[in-house]
Length: 247
Image 1 (cartoon, rainbow, N blue to C red):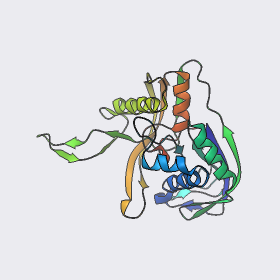
Image 2 (image 1 turned 180 degrees about the vertical axis):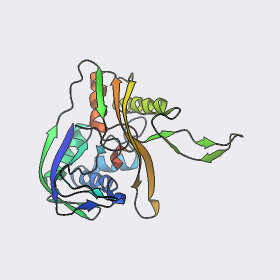
Image 3 (image 1 turned 90 degrees about the vertical axis):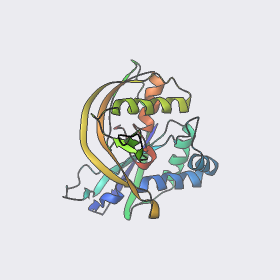
């Protein structure tokens, strides 16, 4: 399930550092207000055997805003989406959005006009053609030197790089296992790759960046698993705004 909020703003742009970063805090605030035990569990321990957080959100999108060099375009009416395969999460987020008149998106005021629920497609034929509106981040194995010593603890892979598809599918299967669904899901095609993008995450002393690219992919799997992936998002860090699937 996804929730689509219609929002308006008088701002003409959003700083790039704030395009995705505010979403995680807003999600946890709504969970804390409306399902505090659930929010605390997801924040501290995650959910299921892999301790993942089955929540996704995207960036605010303003299709009629005038594009600007070096700035994320905003202005007028737009949309902001949140999603989760867990009904209890959707209920808490729906209650939070229903009571919110304004969302503070990194210093930009987004006035909430209305909120509608968008059910996942049925995917009855066992295939899904999905495109993302934000970059998909895929975490690969640690980089090592010729002697096998670790150079850095994490490495973000891009589509087309060695092992990207392996770790992309591994992430999908871990999501299915987290939800108790059929993990036999496969990637049959990457039919679109967007430009490489880096977006800020975290706050204060923990600010960092994750790197990825928006993608269009075709997946094959059980209808329930595909619906869950559609609701949750592709790749890692979905609660931070990455891998949001186009509705």
